[in-house]
Image 1: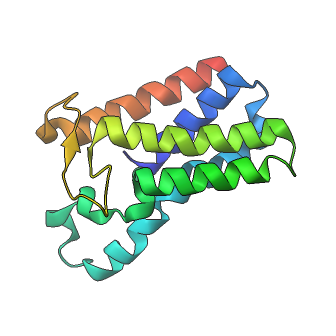
Image 2: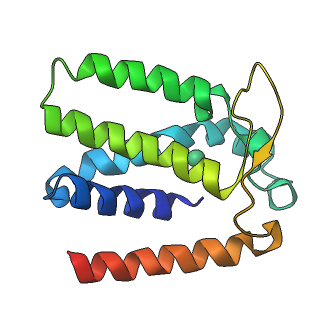
Length: 148
Ligand SMILES: [Zn+2]
């Protein structure tokens, strides 16, 4: 899913779960997009052929799959002893939503690097991916505009 959707979805869910999400905007922005930093080496490696290759499961490192979710969950749980519990909850929600959206919306390799088996939930045909993402992102913008 695109980074705008990840951020806006994290913002909306933080508002619904915790309230006053705008006060935590920088944290939601950073932690809803943190996982996608592993796309940078992929983009640098395939910049000429990126339009053909796109961002499939091979563009993700182990930190973009269950392995990374486990590592980040442990780190956030440990950090929750030292930071505001609401902030820890917002950070955890932002990170977990990223993994959940990526799992539902695209091709993933959940057990990578142990297994390269690709999983696709199949909510919509792959050929409509860009249109579907654009529509969902626009709907999120409208919901946030009305809700905040
Ligand atoms: Zn992602």
